[in-house]
Image 1 (cartoon, rainbow, N blue to C red):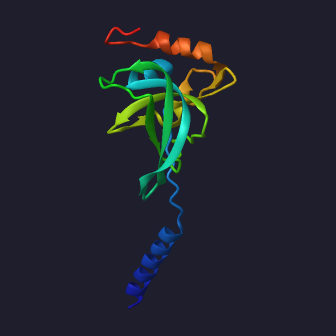
Image 2 (image 1 turned 120 degrees about the vertical axis):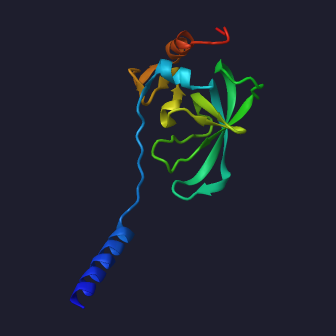
Length: 168
């Protein structure tokens, strides 16, 4: 009798501990160099956020998914064979620690992969570079300064491209 009561208390304690434990999932990005970011991307674009809308589904662990509609000003790399529309949708989950947030009218350089009809960021928030007043703000790209000139960063992207299709 004493033994079964002891195990019951242990099980109840574990159960309550699990209920009270916060499940805050955090992920980390292992930084890629700019060359690796360009290489890992199917599409690299310079554009502007023109719309943000909720996706039709909500992820159980990370919350509501969103689509940022990006108006492309320039394609910096394209390995996708299909025609790229002037506006594309980029999916993101702001509830996931490695995903960035998007703001309307924000100018960005995006490193993208294709996911069905939409695109996703390569390397989470590292795949989004924000542009303000002729400067870019880089996060988590190995050996890249956090703030640098837009012109210089675009030149680095163009110089690092290792095109298999001869596009340069």
